[in-house]
Image (cartoon, rainbow, N blue to C red; front, side, top):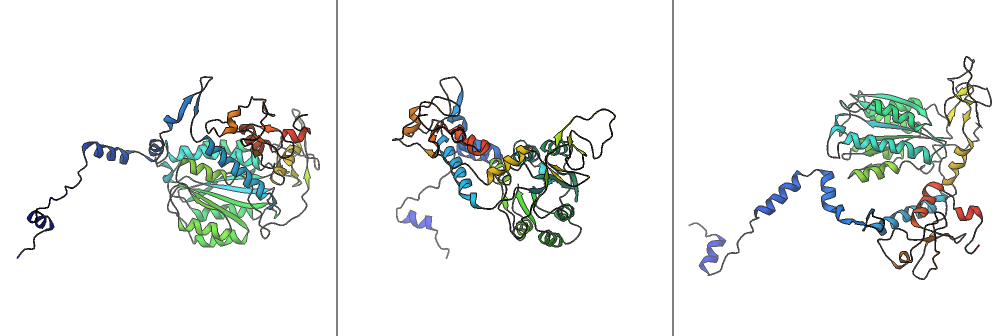
Length: 419
């Protein structure tokens, strides 16, 4: 005999079966719309950022939420930099950026495409890298169609790399990790050991087309004391993670466009120095003078406005290395800006409710609102005080001093509160 179902038993005992939930047309339409949204559209759809705007007294639009969290995050980063000041860092870096220009960068999971987003972030990274490392050099390599192509040699001018990348943004074929590693190994292995040798891969694809054993190239990079880091745009590749772990580099996978920017900018400051990979030594440096080149004059070198103090040959840009006598050529501002990693400005203390706030910011002379000391999350002033000179600064000036200026104006001028 057939076994009666649960629903039949319930009817015989007088129970009422609970009706199943059936989604209506509105729910089905919402699910269909959510599936049709792209990644960048879901980001704004979930946060509803347009609801966080309001008009201030001057008629400008500003964010009303998230200001306090943003301030706390930046101050944590400033405090972390100050806490890591005792860690030895290299002032001279030799970095090759390997950019994946395979067919995978044409995906449209980022607005408007991966290629547009990655290229814009690379332009920003080049400028930030030389801002954080004035004495360092950078080179650019692209991989596509299974080969690796060096676009720029190691140099200290970010505009050179930006112009070269803008002219070679054609994506095709597959990337090749082995060819890229072998290409940069030849260049970095000849450099002196007082500078750190680094390679940064920006990977979009999920496969690599190599002519031989890629692990041989990874072992060669490890033996040459080259630090390889990888920023993956799409997903994690086991080969990339293993390559980073064996060479002591960093590995990260981006989850969004904003996260991709954070991962890239994390490679701009100098990493902790590996004692086994670098050797402390005195470096001869020259400070060339800028002289205009007379028309029809004879000169040695590639030409340029800077004259080497040792051999009087001419170079085009600073910092660089003389092509005739191999002397490292820098300028005094480059050398001075490199010391802020060794002696960072101590983080300022946040003024609590009982703190005595000044009427104006010491740096920008902006009038400070007392509401910033009373926990108003929507106020972007949030004054803080320097523990040494006791001068009060607004939050934008606080962030600018620690992230860009690297010197406290009150301490440099010898002023204290009340002077």
